[in-house]
Image (cartoon, rainbow, N blue to C red; front, side):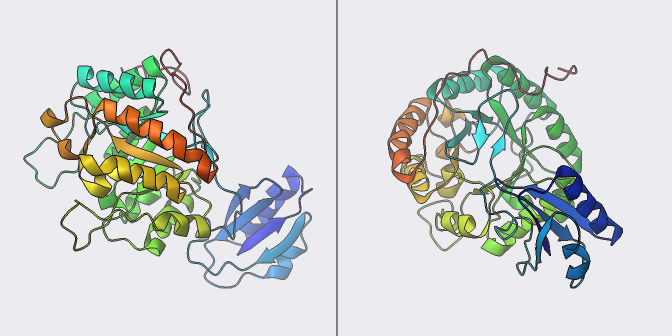
Length: 358
């Protein structure tokens, strides 16, 4: 169910409706829009008494939401969600493209800083780097853990780049949430429902990568798990699915971008690195992703990919990243987008100082 408030509804009226919903034994999810606020109702097993709600002050109408993903649906929120970051003009969603760039894994302080300074200078707003790596083999590099998080916190302080990194389980989720700006839930964990619910209790943006064989509905339901716990700052990411092809690591499904945007208000990024697994395919697919309407690109960049401890073949060189930025900057206006490329070095970290444990 969805309670649509009148455009002139006061904060007190909205709060009163939320409290009434809670008294009925359900959960209320107020989602402010450009013109009015909608309040999603979850926890109900069947139809909610509309008359009870329609009589409350400030309520315009009560409508039934038929889709299983309620809070992620455009039925609840027509306007696109834009996730901003305090202390910076960086955002995910909206007119500006978001660029997330960095190595698959943080391997050393020198390696991470070298890459971060180059992608920042080229115009990235976010730095991606793995601290905890879910690897197919237990005998290969698993990431530097806390040390990598500390290095990335230094990068944020030095360059102003926001930090995006993956959490593997409940234990690493708490650690990542302490140090990073965006918590990534990887493809293998897209349907780890206990982890999604735990991430929903955070008040920090969560980036969910599409599972290896996930349908559109399953993808949006993963977002719904996070949102149902009260965290509405969710970002989706297409990173390729498994098919019969053998010329790429995965099949990058760009058709899901307009499909998501038709059904959901959540922003969606595209990862052409995992989507193809081939360095020579990353730039063409990044161009195609922007042309398809994606809200941004998540790409792996390494200064020495031939020596990378993970995903070297799909990591592009810094000079290729500059070329990618130049190309998508020209494509962006065609689809009503822009690519801000301000220099970040010297910016302050968002949200206050780096944790004292550094």
